[in-house]
Length: 453
Image 1 (cartoon, helix red, strand yellow):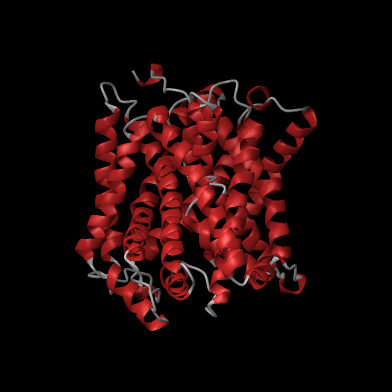
Image 2 (image 1 turned 60 degrees about the horizontal axis):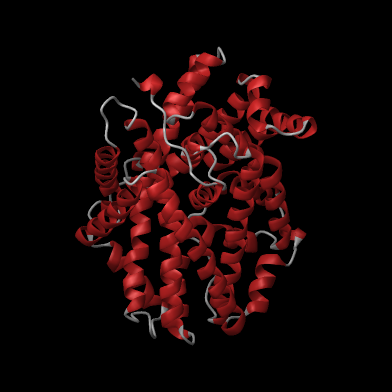
């Protein structure tokens, strides 16, 4: 029966922490945070961002982990049990379903973009970027994503690799690969930082990222820092509630939450130090987004000493970041499906992977054969199918789930339950509860309004 099903637990604290940091560290860390930091006051933005991570991101991470460990089941089953145990309104069960829908739909298009890293890793390995200019880089990128069959195969390859790991389970699959993947990711980042110091314009890169310019800080900049802080730590995406369901009782929630927040922020900062000195040394634009990764940086790698090797290492880094996040996005649905009577993890993982790949074909085709399809064109919105899926997940579903998590943990869960799980001092508990009850809901509401306007 589902009610008596118990998931396995993490065999080591290191495996859990590395997997959880991997869930938070994604492609966005490697381009979005450094770019918006540099464009919005540099060091001033970074200070405000770090403040928001500690003040709001940390309480939300701890809250989602608390909910996951309390249930020790899939997100849906956990919320069903908690709603019943806390005599809460059934509407809170929506958190469980959102924690399945968000990662499933999110992975369907995230895998498409992640597959580009495999494509460009191949190109870099064969020194394709040598002597490339901006026009050629743009044409190359457009040509690669414009091939539906090739992109479908790459998307399928990325999903197959993800399925292969998740099918092996929490400890033999996810934890084992995280112990390899995350140290390699940090190692590659450090190597790229050293290369940037030696061969890039490190002075301009550091000035862009860290020189505080409070004159550039506006209300919009503060909201951008707030949004980046809340969502970069993977709150509301379904991964933390699922991974935390496998936590033993002797793992400290608050210490784990702090390490996850620090690790995610450190990767984002190192990425900026690694990337932007290379960009500035090549006299290229620092504008963010996929264009920075797949059009601007290949030009830089084609111009700089040892750029062939550095480019290959960089796209390995991108793949590692994307892959660690993909594992965390696939696991919530698998966690739910294997609770069915007679279910088998391998079979459920394969079925989920195939379904994710199939849904992801919508995003693949939106860059080629369906590029001219704009479902909301009648509303003067020229978003493609990919754009609409991305907008719905990132700007509506994730913030909404994070808001529900904050309200549920702050108001619906009893003091006795939360104090038992957190085990923190009375003063720290009071601050945590106050943040969840008042600060986080207000902040998330402001971010949602800003995202939707």
